Amino acid sequence: MAPRGGRGTIERKAGKWWKRVARARTNGSRVFTSRVRAGKGTSLRAVIGGEESLPFTVK
Picture 1 (cartoon, one colour):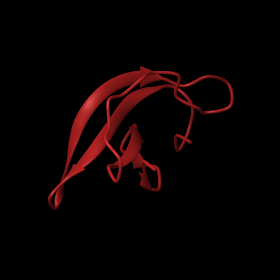
Picture 2 (cartoon, rainbow, N blue to C red; picture 1 turned 120 degrees about the vertical axis):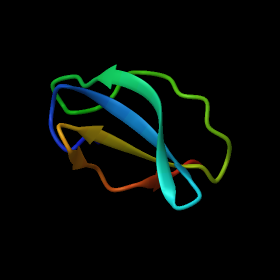
Picture 3 (cartoon, rainbow, N blue to C red; picture 1 turned 90 degrees about the horizontal axis):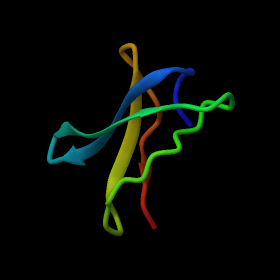
Picture 4 (spheres, rainbow, N blue to C red; picture 1 turned 60 degrees about the vertical axis):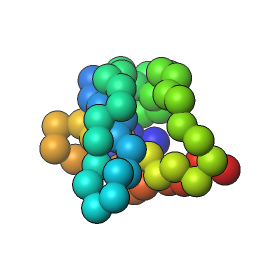
C-alpha cells in the first residue's frame, strides 16, 4: 500500500540503494495497479511525495 494516494514510483532494493522501476498512480484505496517484473525475494516499496511505504518482499 502506498503511503498516501496520488502518483508516485515503485522502487526495488539494489544493494544498499533503492532503484526506481516504475511510475504509477494509486486508486482510491492507495493501492498501485501497475505491473512490475520482480523475481522471488525482491524487495519493493512505493514512494509518493517523499513518503515511503514499508518495503515488502515478493514471494
